[in-house]
Image 1 (cartoon, rainbow, N blue to C red):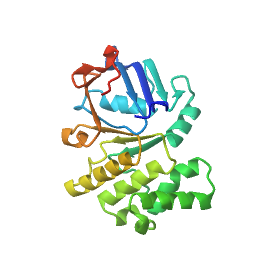
Image 2 (tube, rainbow, N blue to C red; image 1 turned 30 degrees about the horizontal axis):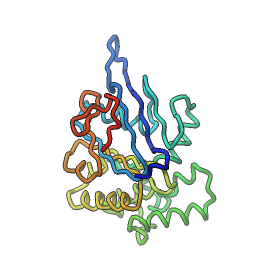
Image 3 (cartoon, rainbow, N blue to C red; image 1 turned 135 degrees about the vertical axis):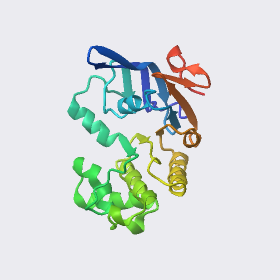
Image 4 (cartoon, rainbow, N blue to C red; image 1 turned 45 degrees about the horizontal axis):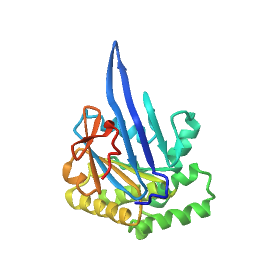
Length: 240
């Protein structure tokens, strides 16, 4: 643990309620959570457990109904949409089940995209994108389009794109969901390498064997977090 550094994520009593017609659905119930720099955390739960809602809040794609989120030392609950967009682009690297690559441009151009949004100059963008592709073992595929790459290689491009801004958090939502078993092992091995290099990773999955690759496993059921039998919302750190 790097106790002298601010945690990457602090959730305090976060709840999320959705209105569906005349009814309200409580998707998250008083979740408190701290994730420190360099941790690899898996959040595992079945469909309808609240894990997608939690992922959206952690990724600043949605806002909590109650409670607070502090990301990389910054409270995000009161920020406007432009500022949230900046945080999503700069501080969070997203890896999704669908690779979300642009089919008509090269791997390198796909990796450059967050830097385009950040206003980085073209020469510097390319240099950083090539370095990110090299980091995931795809320097020799930089000019290939997604259709010329395997599923595992496409997900590696997506990981490189997520890493290119040097984000505080890598947030992976079912990253092996569209991969065969060999490609899944390859991508999970990449996450393990990134963790050893000090990256902070949160992996969302419904598969226990995928979650077991992480350093910590949190279970979400009925909108509440559990770790080692302890409730996240019970005033515990949800920590070791």
